[in-house]
Length: 192
Image (cartoon, rainbow, N blue to C red; front, top):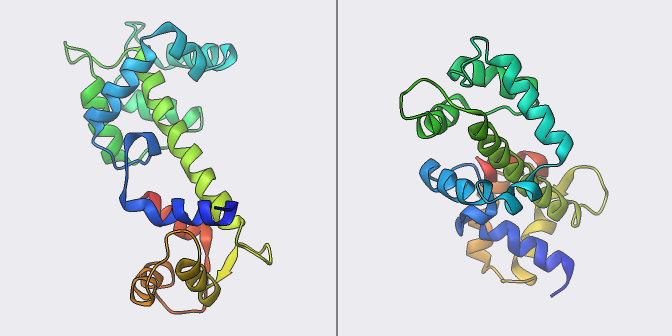
């Protein structure tokens, strides 16, 4: 299987989602449990963040911990995440916050920040992988892929779609039947 086939296969298998994919719509409890198991192991924790990142996140946490109780509330968390370049959907962040909030309901501690940042990093990695997969079939390097060409790839490479399957998938890819699609938009739809 060549690189293009591999990349298209990855795009087609969006329904087969697992936590390892890093997609955002996974049950928050599952995400948190897996990340906790990785984070609280010193070896794994060191692999996820460089020393500079660790220092940056801890310092930023302290800046937003305005009452110095080693916890931040939901509003402070939103501001902190935005300040370090991570934007979460408010509903998703709210669910994660409730899962990570300390047992007294007084906010989250700095370790929870690392869990949230880890989750967002995994999502960004997955987005980059999908973009690279589409770039490999963007023959003109324009950010667009011709719909007919992409349909042909679906039917001839890797797991081969039938014509009916390809037509159905193309309704998702090019819903207005414009003849081409901007693949960054498709990546966002896939990761939604």
